[in-house]
Image (cartoon, rainbow, N blue to C red; front, side, top):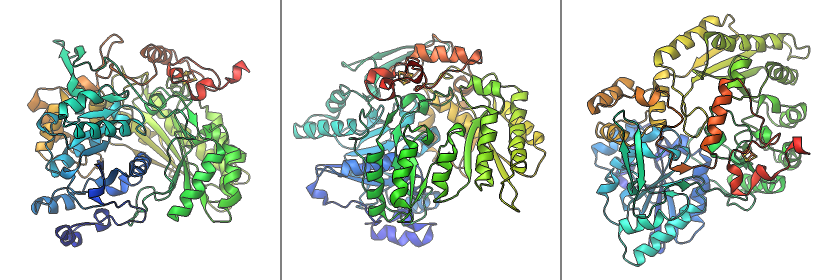
Length: 618
Ligand code: SF4
């Protein structure tokens, strides 16, 4: 429920529906009847945040406890931010309309590095001190989780505690400690010290970092009994793990406006550039029965007529065909369509195609990632060109006419020949369409080739690699453009400037806190959006602080350098990542988890794919 002051602003801004709450299934509680108030902040717009599955899960989970009221907060778009600032209206939560500064917990999900400026800006707009050391009482506890928490160091000065790994259990444990501390009159620092003893919690203020003269890390020392290494948490049994039976249904159109059903966590593949493929290990599946029941409940409670089966790679779900059979039993009659995003080239079989064809036919998206077979072997993308072309032929025969292909440029060992191969592969897909005997009559094909720039990420075999310079990336983008000779292919590429800044923060250390603090003072926000991002302005901040951003983005690290995230453990060992990096340089691939266990380290969680029988052992 928004205040009268906010109501007056709504006619002056775009999409006022972003700022009013009141949607179907939002949770309203009596604030005096709860013990703990939690502001779940998504550091991007309403439309982006409302599409995020993690937020839906944690919002429902926290609100399932009668002593917690969790509310939603999104970054106001620039027009609304200006109106609110001009009238001294602080950032507020959608459900109660209360200022964020009133909350016990202010929690952020960190989905991408370019949202870091929004995290600080949201604290500033809430009138909450941005630095952890300036927040003194046992309230306004700023917590963060999500994939970017795997290298928490660039945000170390601002966040009180990070959740490492999956949040479903650990956030409740922290809230329990908070309730106890408040009851016993304990201080904020005592609370943080107690939390540091919980597995999966990292309290950055309890660690001292020393640097070498060359700027690399010399040592990382825990104090006050904090653990030397913080281990991630995972949900071991996905069947019994909490899953919401309803979602807040937005009033304005959002990015993914449909019910989302998680089918498994983790990925069996191990593509060497992909952070998600390593940090979410091991694969843990839900059974088809559990998924089917959860889908039915979601559709009933939200009224959605589309369910998207969510995972890192849907066709790797070991029971995908039985699952689709179960779902089509009722979804056809109820006119609910099932969508399968994240399909692999080798997972689009006739059987799957026929199942999803019965409901809705949208464009197909595949991610070969590299144009040449050599480079696909370097990155361990175990996909062959003939597999891609025969998959496309299957799709064209089945009536599809649009294909999107995702690639990356700037990958380790890449040459201009590898880059030109991207255009060639796009052309081969076009040629495949015209050679298909059963292609749709009278229609032409449309192939979209998208190239993003490779950003080396922590906890991947490429975490030691330099990123290509912006200039090199521009040369490669031009090379693809010039290599495309048909109008049937549309070429899109991602701005290299934003990828550069992403690379800086992805592998940054605590020295970057100063940069983010300055960025906040100067009002930087929405760096993931072209209309707000300005690399030159960021470079001025780096200069002002005497920090060279290419030290973080473009420098090759040695295997024995202490990395800023070395005190965090995601299960996969450093030795394994080094072995994978060395195999990349020999163009050697690694089979996926179901073909052969490669002892990455994730079996220590005692669950998931690591305990299935590998195919080559049967
Ligand atoms: S331990 Fe083996 S099966 Fe388990 S995630 Fe690692 S490589 Fe895969």
